[in-house]
Amino acid sequence: LKSLVEQVVAKFGKISGLINNVGWGKATPLWGSDTEAMVASYKLNTISAYNVTKYCMPYLRKEPNASVVFSGSMVGVTPSPEFIEYSTAKAGLINMAHSMAVASGPEVRFNVVVIGSVDNGDATLEAGYDPAMLKKISDAIVMKRRGTPADIAHAFVFLMSNAASWITGINLMVDGGGMYESKMPS
Image 1 (tube, rainbow, N blue to C red):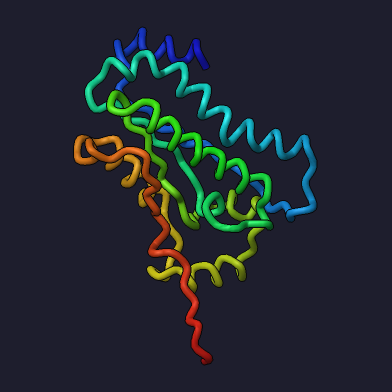
Image 2: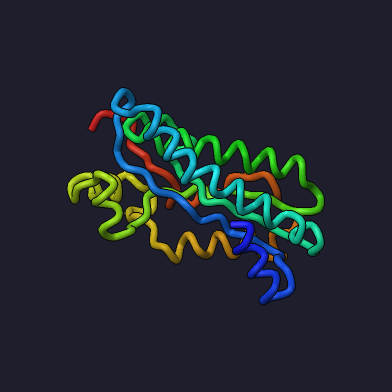
């Protein structure tokens, strides 16, 4: 990663922003994991973002309105025992991003896009969902659809922009209004 950052600086002369868009996790029930799987998820979803950010920081500190945005997940902020490896790693990522914001303000801004259910094609099915589950999710979302990759990209662009120059240490929920189910009898 350090070499990659050095190559970027050699080619472009600076780094003024970083989007840490990494994440993958499969359905794993609460008591169905083990040490190796938990550590592997943490390495992929949290430590990789930490390392690339650490190597970019000397360059980010030199730029006005420097910004780092992390891809979080709704399963990192809500109880998600069916995705224990992924949800635990994303919860750690969110705390890490907030800690970075506190330690790095006002030089560099740090925020998290907390991503709801997004239509990622086959990757969603590989994570353990089936079409019936996806319809149930879509029906429960306030906007009555799952997100698109473009929906998420727009949130990243906003948090990287000058329009967000006074925003740091937040979780921007990009989830179609969240999932809602009436508490009234039908």
